[in-house]
Length: 456
Ligand code: AMP
View (tube, rainbow, N blue to C red):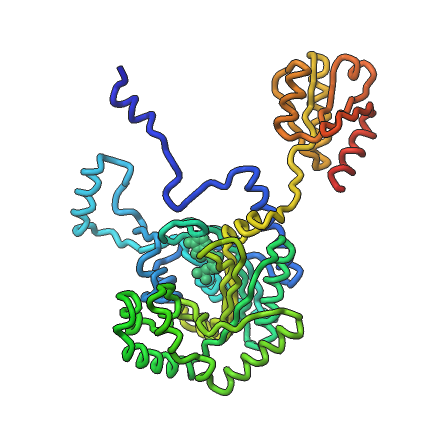
């Protein structure tokens, strides 16, 4: 009979809904993807900033806006210090303790897992006094973000972004264009080819509020053609009505005024210069008047890149200008623009297109036989690994046939055979597993041969 305690111990844990493991060999593809981003971004003189995973909830509330889904519904928020040790006591005791919290004298701060990276970048820019440094600050970040969304293909609760931001005194359209050029150079580098770039301008502090008011008036007139969500947004954030994918709402949305017809002279000029700058770089784009971004801090340029093979969640990157954000967070007047790539989706699209990079994997399986061979096996494994060759050294002796069988199953390209003969003659037998070609090599030749194979 199984006791209750034993049963409890046998509970199978699973990754929390909306989170997942990135398991080898897939993780190698992820590393490649992130390395490529680092290489391309560094070549544009961007440098990496490593940011905290959690920040004060208020930072996101201010930067992103409290009437966005991201802040109002999707953040993972905690009290710090926690009101009680959640791991102590039964669930009943825990909820009882929560309920009696009213008398708790400790001052607690609400902190949230970051749902996006820009707010932290701007906080760091201000905190480190970056405005006093020469030139524009060009930073990128790589890492997980957390949003409590409804999970589906390409949409997770823990997902990964690679973002880049330019902060400084200039809002020259050449900055926007170069940032977009860098993004597309990265996508080309990783084989994400079937993409479309959409651009738009959403005006500035002068023309945007007037347009938003006009939009609100038009939306109020057509109110009965919209569902509950959109009706609420008419009052809270009318631009977000454009995000609606509900088929029933589309005819009414199509009739709404376009921001392009309501930009002030400066914003119009900026937008047309941006298109010129993109043309100069041979970058193709489509204008999309519905591209407004749900976040409050964007001004002027907005852009999005979609990729093939992803179904409804096909946006792989979103970005735009946010000239008021640094000031909003208590810093000096500063211009800013940035983007965030959704790595999960970008990698899914690369996988679906079949244009996967060749990953090196395991090069050498050492088939050692006999106690005398073992110390030589340990030595040669160490030397090969020092030159960057991937080596599997079995911890226990195996029969020859079994060793070669395992080498094959592990996908090794070579078996390095080390038995009594090899020890006696101070050579190694290297067997290529794809065609069983065998060669006998001394140590120096072996190291040279495998190192050059690795580089090719
Ligand atoms: P945003 O910060 O909302 O502009 O998102 C930028 C990019 O991050 C999007 O274009 C997506 O590729 C990706 N992204 C956003 N939310 C999720 C999510 N829940 N799961 C996976 N990727 C996401």
